[in-house]
Image: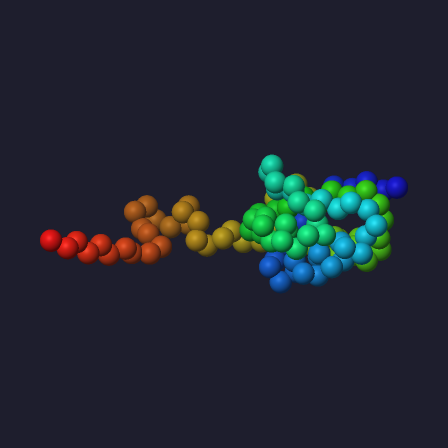
Length: 110
């Protein structure tokens, strides 16, 4: 039996296909990020994870269709585990100090 732990990058559009392929496996497939571990066969569980982060998939078994899907998703992650996709533009570090993404106008009534 093959045991493997691999890092992947999931987009929202790919979650349904990933869960469908994982559901066809006759072995356990877990997806985790930090302290959150979910069953990869649960679409609600996978959608509950932060899809902007690199996720780790752990499984022990072999399914050719699942291996093909995992290898395709793993190409978005480098060998050192760093993200190869550009950083999220809305991060605080990408904006000049003192700027805000939105302006809030407060109205005070006397």
